[in-house]
Amino acid sequence: MKIELRDEGTLCISGYVNAVERQSELLPKSKGAGAPGDFKERIKEGAFADSLSRLPAVKLTFNHGKIIGENGRNLILTEDNIGLRAEATVDDEETVAAAKAGLLTGWSFGMTNVSDRYVKQADGTFERDVNRLDLTEVSLLTRRPAYHTTTVELRNGAAVEMRNADDLPEVSAEELEKISSYSRRRLKAEEVYIFSVMLCDNEIDRDCERFSVAALIKLAELFEGKTGIFDHDASGRNQTARIFDTEVIADESRQTSQGEPYTGLYAKAYMMRTETNADLIREIDGGIKKEVSVSLSARKKYCSVCGRDLGTEPCEHIKGRYYGDKRCHHIISEPTDAYEWSFVAVPAQPKAGVTKTSGREDTETIKAINAARQREIEILRLKGKMYNEN
Ligand SMILES: [Zn+2]
Image (cartoon, rainbow, N blue to C red; front, side, top):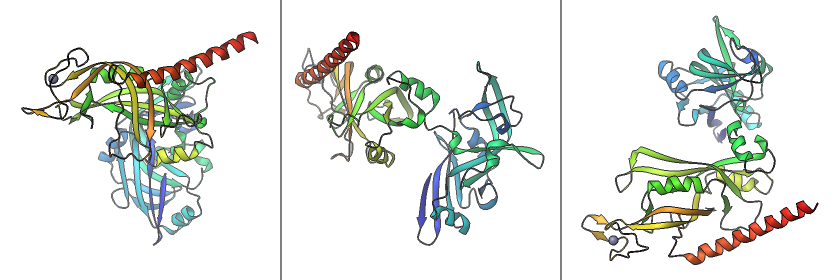
């Protein structure tokens, strides 16, 4: 939740009220209308958008009581690819005073006429899929009132269920599961910070090079588990993040200069929430650190004009130059390894992009990195030996 106090005593508040397609914490039976037991809930993508299209006049309340606004007036509710997002401008004195005192804690919402499905789990709890709902209200909370955690409210005979934004874990169980394959012990949700980065794409970069889509798919596999450093400084051992999930996403609505659907390799990374990382986390949240450079090696690089493999058959075409209506660029394909990725703060160029090292051109870089990795492996071996001796 982002709260901004304007000098004339107006609050601008924005944030996510709920995330779709994301499992909640375990909720008590009493929070679901007709729930057969304690349950974890997942709201289907599009359920909020559907409700807003049918019933747009959603009220904004303060602690589920006083009405302080309405969607379309001083509240804008939308469902985007994360979930239900609210942007409110509030000048209610009581709410403003609560915000000034730092008492506003989060969003909550009410839903009714829920169409759902409960599936019993091995441990006796349930998973609930909410496919359709009527959004009744969105509320700003000062603290978690007791009734939120206990009951379903009845209004005009209809059951209204309340949900708090903090019923949703910032890190999902699924994500923790994936992270646990990289951490020495099982981490708790509150110990880790998760963020997403775009590693590379199929658009021609400033070096007149691009990745083939097949290369991006291969790189998705190679970057799993790879560590990232900040500002090219590997000395801060604590200031590292590790990729625990990758995905290649094609955006059919956006075309590259080559007429392909824009395709990017996206990664999810985690880092520990330590005191030394607190500033970094704030910077990432604030969007300051967002450029990433990656280093990798690839077996082949093709000329876009003649299609020759430049490693074995150099051609006369020059990168960046036009041949007819074709602009020569190199297509990187068959990646063999991904070494590291790095966060670059405030890059000199608007798109800092990618540092690539192709098999033949930059062997020194690769060697240097390999040597460093070799040392790391040896250190691990030493450690292993020590453990064996104990
Ligand atoms: Zn050529």
